[in-house]
Image (cartoon, rainbow, N blue to C red):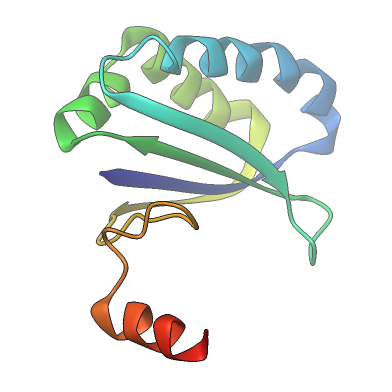
Length: 117
């Protein structure tokens, strides 16, 4: 699984205009084979910063999204007009578990949790 972590700031002069292409990108990414999920958050420490977090099944799925013509156009527009700054990080997820599905939880965490009960 691949995580896309995209931090950015939108030029306040274009903030209202940015909403439409951002909504289109949200819609288009969901159609990519191998796309899993997308969330967007406002920073708790910097009111101008936004964090977008997406997960993909594989690098191949990321490549499909990265090379989408509409996404490439949006990237160009974002750099030229909307973003005053941005940072993109791509990461491989090494573990993925939940409260009810702990199959990938580290064994020392499982042991510690069992001992605390």
